[in-house]
Image (cartoon, rainbow, N blue to C red; front, side, top):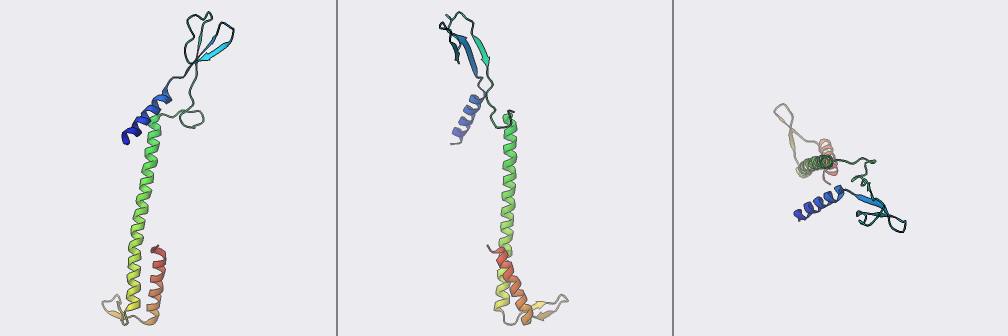
Length: 148
């Protein structure tokens, strides 16, 4: 499948770079003829070869872009898209971790009847009802934010 894509790309590139030539000549009845082939040898008037420029490959206001420049731009856009997806995946993984932590906190504060927490000085303090409710509310807010 990949080979077919590359083959199609190469054929498109060849067709785009083909030199468009149009010939103008007057036939024996005095009519002006425009063809893509040279005039027949029996024509008395001399044929004139017209040079016609093909349209630009991309709509760049009449400027044709180099294929390598287009490839560089494509690669740059692809790299930016990959970086954005990588950032999004990292954020998603971090949100999932925070969600699990919030759910664990909620279970701990809701299910433990007599809960102790470190006081920061090497001791422990029993959690009263006000502190328990604040921590439960904080855990519920975190769950609402990170567990989507």
